[in-house]
Length: 394
Image (cartoon, rainbow, N blue to C red; front, top):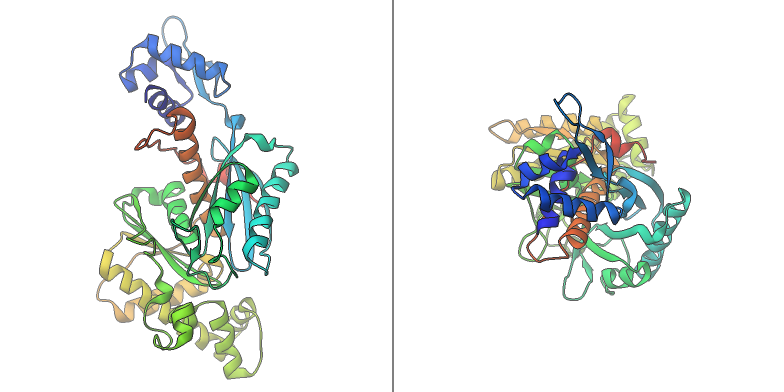
């Protein structure tokens, strides 16, 4: 615990002197000096100069060595898989994206492993320095089996031990978490929204889901299914078999729903971006389709706010991030809820889940290395500046 407490002070306030660390932690200067010397010898901290403006001898200041280790964040979606490698400062140092393997199952496991290695090779990063991987998945991990439930857009991930197979292929610790949960953590960790103890992140894209941060902590629920709002019983008929598999609300709000609604009215099959473009130039059918979708999303947000009353709702995802949809959602909320709801666009865009994965991975890495994995230990890794995180993104 001594080492982890000292490391926590260095990563939070560095560059910082040993005397300052002693004051912050309550440990003696001798103890701090011994721990810092060991950390420096092992390559985890480095000197970065001396204090300025003090009378007498200037003190040496230390910070964490950013490239001493790396973590991998993976955002696995129904259409794309994105992998980012981050250093100990939380900056993305390499990123790679490609379409999700439609075969699903073990093929997707192999794809993720391949992309982690390719991301490292792209910037000449030694793969042995990658210590932890956090995978965001569009579903719920079943801890006993490793199966991923409620993920209809990726085939056969409900039939294999997903984290175990990844650990076997990567040779490192792998943590699997719901992708929207990670996005909520990312927004809370890296943006001004960290000032909010209660936040809901609603993602609309290939599917729809929500992540809840209440009292500064992620809410998973008894079975890990908190936030699976795609199964809210409205939008489509919740009693139909397809709703049981996909979710009634998801059938009325996500990518396929928007495309189907437009095709039903026009006979033409076009992409979601094309529908947004058509609406912007006066296509009344496209505009009505988006308004109907916004109405359903607004209902979901109202349901969340009626139950947990978050300080802020963040709207994200490939569709939810569109400002045209955000404006419509705000209008629809005002029609059906008696008080204002603060709804904001995602500050991180498609990198929200990667940011959350980075925060979880860095915290886990620090606990494993500096607290020897001691149960109950928590090391809060401060978020980098937004521009620092994004400077390496693709």
